[in-house]
Length: 301
Image 1 (cartoon, helix red, strand yellow):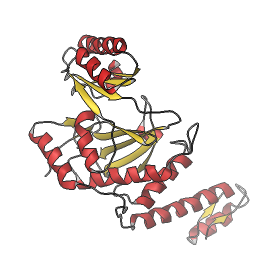
Image 2 (spheres, helix red, strand yellow):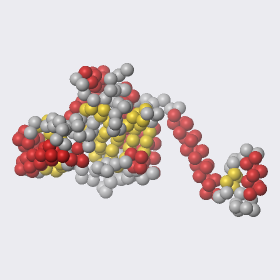
Image 3 (cartoon, one colour):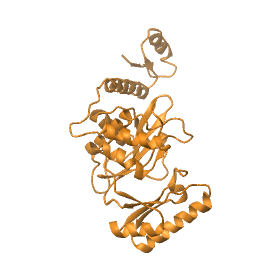
Image 4 (cartoon, one colour):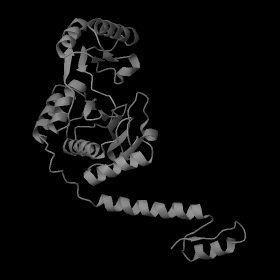
């Protein structure tokens, strides 16, 4: 039972009597409704927490392969995996990624681009620069050999000037995903010191603040919980319910979130706590195509 006694002063005694009797009472109808909806949300959350997460029948996961890849990377001294390195781990959990090639220099990048066809994306490989966009380390829609050559040389020169101490491990070359009518989303897993891994969903983009622009859920997720995360993200305007040409594929996005959740639960190596910047698994989603990002690692205890 919730009560509302209107009138700041005329109903003061009534509110006091109800409060002393342990009956919730509010000054305004809006406050009463807000309190009621908080109770509804709490009950829904409690019900969801009791759900047993299960894998959809259509999903498979090669846990042993993912563990082997991650452990090998840790044995090799890696603390992060870039796009090229994390792709096999994601594929082990059925998460599709764009084919990626490594080029040692601009000449090899041009050769790869000629082989796979234009347009291509060019990305810097450096373990010392977590956010490549800060040094213009990502160039998209390069359509000719001259553009690839110029972009690669300029990218490396910029890094040597701005980050002379940074190690450069070459370049990543990818075919551009077909983004016509697609919606760019971002799935991020970060490690919270209190709650552990958090799965966050929001719109893509360079400037991205999780606390303001993401809906958050705790793994493990099943399809119902993942769908609820997507609906909450739409409801709270963290993501759009449709792109310019088509509605959001809620079922497909929910399945991706379940796949990411299973990966995080099965592989405690990621995301790793204890780094100065948030440890995370990042993934951008364009319609049916997915761009893997990077992840931080730690040795399993």
